[in-house]
Image (cartoon, rainbow, N blue to C red; front, side, top):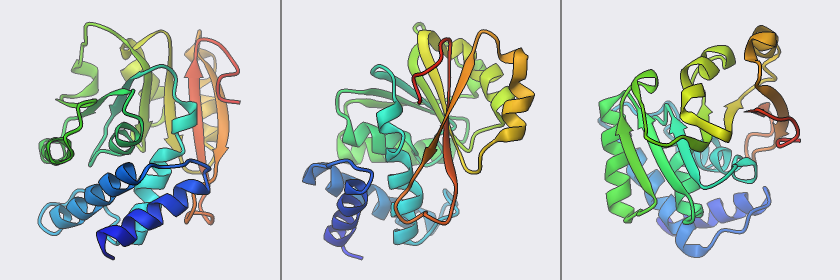
Length: 218
């Protein structure tokens, strides 16, 4: 696929979310995927290697979180190759996105993309999440395929401000994780939304929002 074809496919997919992407954002997302494919040839960053799979499984899957975000200070925990943080930063210049991972090669890729695209609203942190101690908490801490919910909350709770939210992107409905969370999660409450990702119609996707109040993810 050419960069123009990738950008067009991303715009068409985003329109089904529905989200309208500016041409510039779609073009930057195309650069992200082409660079990811290039780096994947020599450094194992993601399991998905084909461009159509990356469009659905990385970019569009990341963008499903956009309507659920709270505030503008966003922390992407265990960002890996930059998902969902990079697509969210590219498509929402008003956000301040911090992308955290303990894997040096993945952080180096994310830093490369930030420089390549000139993203002023994204920064990286090379650290384990439990050792990260920012001066100010985040409005939304988001994670995709990071850890089971109880461990995720235990490791990230200190990073969320008083009115903030933990947003976990999951596959199948995590009934066992929610049951394990149980009363131990107090004062946190969980809301679950089913997500529809263009190109991943055969796969279940859910968003779990953990907040100190109910109803933000309904």
